[in-house]
Length: 273
Image (cartoon, rainbow, N blue to C red; front, side, top):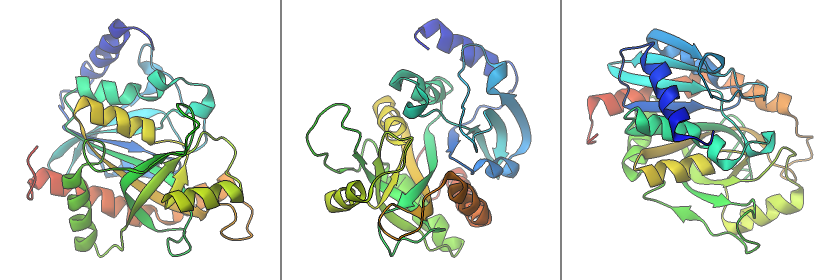
């Protein structure tokens, strides 16, 4: 997706199909597409029906936008994302953020399935992301440092996530998400290094999306569904099937949290759009 005119074509294609003007967007990670059922008066737009728009290839990413309302808040959900390991460049991976910016999105919730690098962050837990590590070594061979706070991690949205979790009686963890290239799972030695650098969870997405959202002035919040222990934390073998099964098991809790955050945004509780 190299052309600005292509982005305009994508925006036009979406606006032709709905009069809803969402202010909040959600990107749904692996196995988390069930959340689309929370949307009322929904319009579903398959990625395949949008000119110049790429298609996800990974199991658990259906590849469609769902536009409508949750509570009183107009939303757009992206069910399916693009990963660097699929062969996409960074411009394509971050296309949804540029699209959301063009659509007038103010708040972005980026969700993912991730592995825990801490024994006290267990599979099935949900973790709000307060900072990130780029462990891809794409830009430098130096060891990465944790990046926290604004403009990439909205302090206001993190506060709203804590409020929503408390209201829903959900034990929300808060930690640092680490981006690795994939598609292979990390080695025990890599996981040990990530933990030493300050990482709490590890996955193969989200950081490019958070960076782009921050640069565009979009308030961003990351939520990880911890689906497994990372390599070396236990002796279990890691599989994508385990990721999908755990995501399914916590679907009800995940939905309550994300819905609660969106409704809290809609009410404007201590938050200015």
